[in-house]
Length: 382
Image (tube, rainbow, N blue to C red; front, side, top):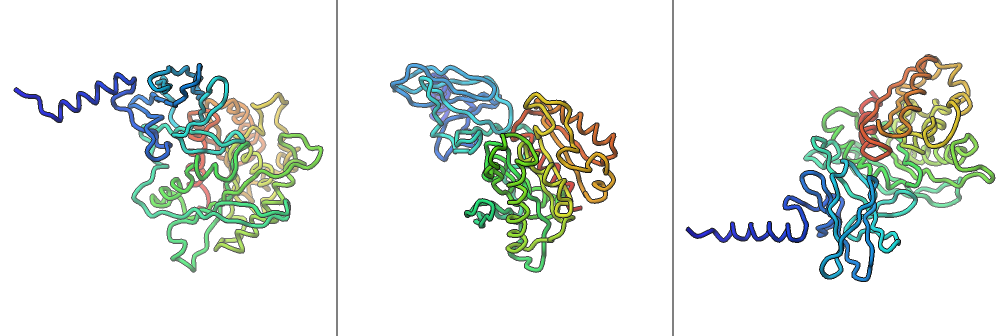
């Protein structure tokens, strides 16, 4: 009995893939540029990375979970297959003879104060940030003039489905801030904000809202060291209150009142949201801080003194409860900030503050922040 030609070809492809050291069920990562086979992922989330460097003597791929030596093959192509990679988004790079090199097969993402490669590892059973067959909103790239920097600056505005059709409707606004070493592209590219909101709105789990994603990096006042301080927050506070919020209210159909504005952010942006948001409850009626190091976990420090950052916060808890619709904190369960965040949650509640807290599997990473945004967006403007 003759073997069908198709079966022969299938076996040949399988054998060739084994010979090259590639898993037979491996597929390009979702974060690859179009047409790039590598990095690829198999069904067990093992990543195969490849780069051509014929003159190199040593090549590694650097991932958050560790560095992996690559093996040189034909035509100077280096390759390695890693152990399973945790689901979520991860930055990575190649180290070629000691030099850090980015992968031409990956889209570029801005993080850690530079552009670099990133790999998206799908999480089984998680699809809340996938593109689905639902009505889609728009991400608008917008310039505005800053009186703080005396220059033009850039932000993104997510408008929900139907914004350009329902011209009589006004919308609440979530101001969403990135972390340190990032900019306004973070919540757009790594965070997948538009997909998260599209799906929540379609499921009627969140109300249609605008989301403003601005650049929170402002020049620090002279003599103010890096880190969280009231003095260091002044430029961001002025930028947000004097430039960004008025610009959005003037150029978009907003509900221009505190109960219809929320301020949230991750890491550095969470600290900005906590300090600036709680000091301006007449402007923002909901506050969210995701994985902020403000409470501790990133430096040696004593107990967090909320009163020093937000005067009246400890002694006037009832006033904040009356003004805030939602006060929300979150953190990754493997983040070094988690125990400090849990401690302040306990302390705040002991002082009479009404707040919501949630934690998610993961460290200081985008999978935690995507889930935090999804959770927070369902709670606001109700």
